[in-house]
Image (cartoon, rainbow, N blue to C red; front, side, top):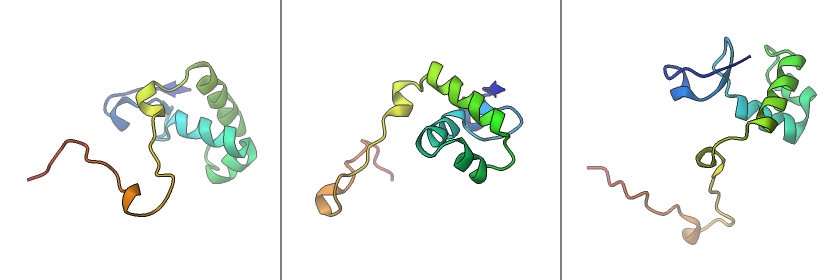
Length: 88
């Protein structure tokens, strides 16, 4: 059910036969429930979504994937900090 291929989404674990990341589906199923996730991704079966949700609970995303930074307020002070990469 879960496959990882460097040629598909840089190796992000996906549902076999799709380019849908398992951690996305797992997070949606956890936050919105299986039925709403199925409504958003009708080409997935309810069973696939339930199994992916179990997979994600047993295999949490590595820390680098879990770390998301969202500003807590809007305004100049909420602007993202430099990543250290300066384009030319």
